[in-house]
Length: 431
Image (cartoon, rainbow, N blue to C red; front, side, top):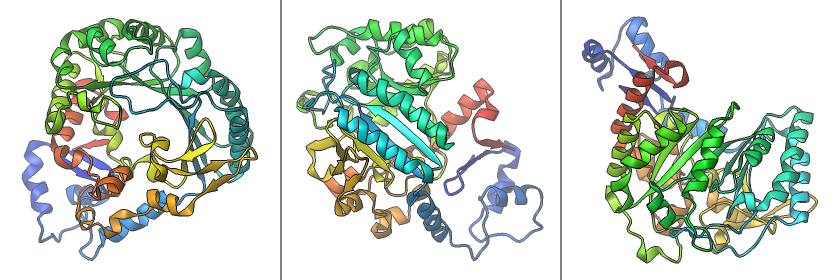
């Protein structure tokens, strides 16, 4: 198996080809007619000319991805309040729903920028975004109308706790092209309800699962990333949870599980959290295997193969968080708790008034001065910017998990691909 991070190509070779492939990939290089296996390795980027400078090629690639005036990505906080009080949450719930003048500013900003855009993407976030229904109801159809009028492709997603995602609400969101959701279920009901209760302490699992089950009966094209936050306690009790998901959702590939270790993210309960520490990656791998064995779809390396796919949205100059009060921010973890994250404000006329120094702090090509990043095989993938916040707070390189676990995740991907026979849906090449 070979993964070229500069080209985003992953290839799987037959066992009898391994010796020949390794022979061609030896450090000393090779000289032979450009045909058959040799030609294939060149086309996929695994073999390069002796004089090639792949770091320079990466710099060109980074520039073309980083400095794009033709893309606009907005993360809209329709509400900064929430109906949940999750034990690991870091948010302060200091403000309510998005103000009318901010909604007007968003519409004006989009109208001004659309003539020069090739793509517009909007993410709804919070708090709980569905708490801010008036903003979604006003901006949802307006964004579609404006993008269609200018002939600009438009995409949209939402991070929601799923509690208010009733069939009626889901139908309306899908009509507004909000068709990619992240929804969290933290394992079986007794564990989920402990970690993700309502603000008055009531359980939430059954309502969320009922909404998910209703969504699964919908024939529309959508995707749900089912996030499972695990800690030292709940990860031991996932078997029944997986069986329940299989019973309620079947093997619907539109629902894909993504496992994340609970971290101390800056919330009031950080000291009480039973985090997994360095063992989190191994536990996540075990959970992915167990879920996959039950026929559930899991998050794999497939969405992380291409160059730049693991760059944090906050590091891109064309991505902005618009808060409920009009504050412009970069990171959904820091929000306005970190002054460095407040990079400007949005006016009702649709102008982004930005602090250039703060913008540069988030978007600078930090890999240029980082010897660790410059030598890393995953540099084209994360570009040294998988989490600018880590670099700011610790001064360390923000390495992605794949740096340590790439081989394991490559194997997971190919096994998933082979089990489901989804050759055409995953960017692999098999020899």
